[in-house]
Amino acid sequence: MATDAAACGVARAALRDRVTTLVRAADPTAMDAICPTTPEWRGRDVLAHLVGVDADILAGRLEGAGTDAWTAAQVDARRDRSVADLCAEWDETGPQVEAVAAVFGSVAGQWVFDACTHEHDLRLLLGAPGARDSDAVLAGGTWILDRLGERLDATGRPALLLTLEDGPVTLGTGPPATGLRATRFEMMRALAGRRSRAQIDAWDWDGPARTDDLARDPFPPPPHDVDE
Image (tube, rainbow, N blue to C red; front, side):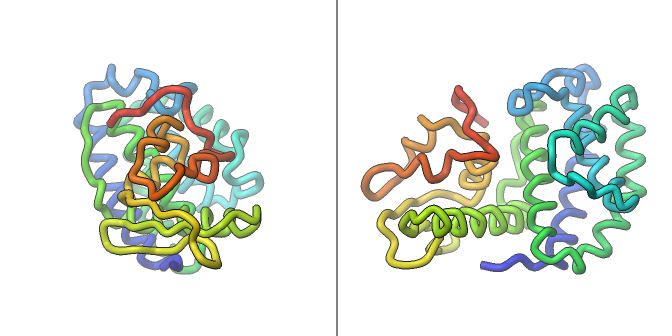
């Protein structure tokens, strides 16, 4: 699998439209609640992070990109702003970043993976499931599955034969030792730390579950099941 950076820009634009439509229609008090999958952030803080990523890309503020300190600064700078104001900023900055996504290379996949993770965090908070077969799930899921394959190789673990809704893919090199049937959405959520070990254990494995290979840093599993 490989990341198509230009396609990531298109997928991210559609995601941004979905998220802004969702949060603009939400009860403001719901956006002030703590998001179940981001226990240090309210719904509006998750939105502030999404908006802040694009603002930082445009401003060239990329030192420490992806770190807790980098994302915390995005949230802190927008902590007291309304959902409407955050959406207005994103309406301005998002299209500019999406238009140049083709130059991002494989980083575009990470950019979409992060945004898609938080789209579904917000959907969980607001009780609005959907978009589980979106282009963002495909692009972000492809990126994180590639990283899983690299990690299996780097740690000397056997390959994994993963059967997705659109067919099989082997993660890692060499003959796969185990098979797993799952959707792209479930794999993406698990690899983002949004599925418990018990949930991963219960998936459709051929042979012993390889939960330790999926439930790893930097996105460790939560101590409780995430039902969405």
